[in-house]
Picture 1 (cartoon, rainbow, N blue to C red):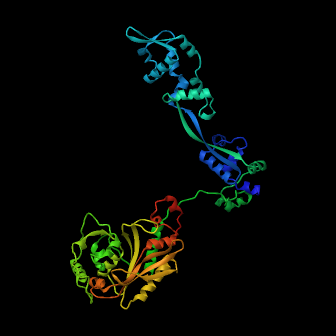
Picture 2 (picture 1 turned 90 degrees about the vertical axis):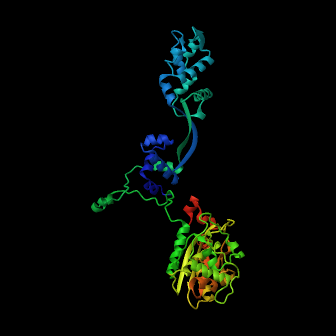
Picture 3 (picture 1 turned 45 degrees about the vertical axis):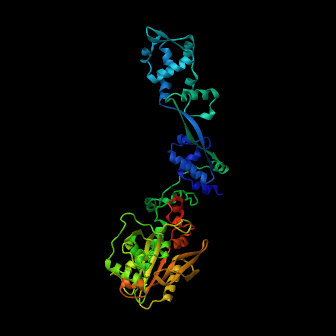
Length: 504
């Protein structure tokens, strides 16, 4: 190691501290010797330690300090001595002694002096009278252990005390506001062999810290010596403010869909059975509803729906449309108004098909928050997001849908390993499920897709037009992109995790 180059990198704090390390090692002594602030000395020590010039040690020590009453008694004397001094000339009553000591001091002094046989208590004319004994006069003339302890240089480290001093400490701790103990962090610095060599070489000299415009203008910088930058020094890690990782990912997904020419659609989180299931041609008695595991709203229980649309959907369920015979059951118009938390993003697609804003041809997407009560684990959550969408255009078929799904998997999950397998959804025919291979979790279901059935499209749109539809579990795609193994980490409140999660 080039010692000269290392010396050229030393900060003024380091130079100041280093000059005193040959004789001084404690942090408090360094603060006094250098006349720097605590934080400046600490920085200097830490930087020197980073350069292996010193070894910085920290240890906890328990110390005793004088409290408010302790400082007062050090100056004025302990109350038991004042008590005895007032009895030298003549005995006194308790009432007279109350003029010398306060109530707390009087009670402590009475108990202490009585245990040492330093006073004699008697009754005279119905009053309590106290006089000093020969033992009390001897006690008055000698300096007690407690008095000796109060004269020590505080703070004092408890483990360094002699047995008699520890006894005095315990006695004083029993009394109010005389002694207090606390834990202190003791910092010491010790020169390494490298540090000794640097001191021997010499660290004096004037180094400029800043290149000023005046130096450049006058050319005086040529005659000055500048401190070298230390690019290897350890610096505190900064946790800068940033957008939550999943929120950032969803914004990126939105941007990509908009760039592909899709328009965004939305709908309420508190939905009705009608838009969430009935409008999707899911029969009210069908077991397919069980997998949605909906949360039902207590208040308000029911919502309002356009009666004309309800009538057309009811007819599709009971009698069928476009050559279908329907489900052949009595459609419950009251049940369809039940409020639930949205279980699937396809509810937004149904609303879009019934909307006056729908364009044909047109393509729409939505990033929707959904809720289903489920067993929470590494790949399932009861609160999750879906990205779903529709393409409405004459002449669309299943091959177009396959192309879209492959593009989505590659674009958003960044994987070429996908599988499209037959699936079942009450509102699409044919139906497929999309799987992608995660490098650590293996094959994961990303979502479902298909072509909306005429029984769903005709009541909402008024005619049949092919509608390609898909719903993707975007939470799982986010796991691909963010390198997350547990879906719950998408919504993590762990600060350490949030600071270290990668940005995309």
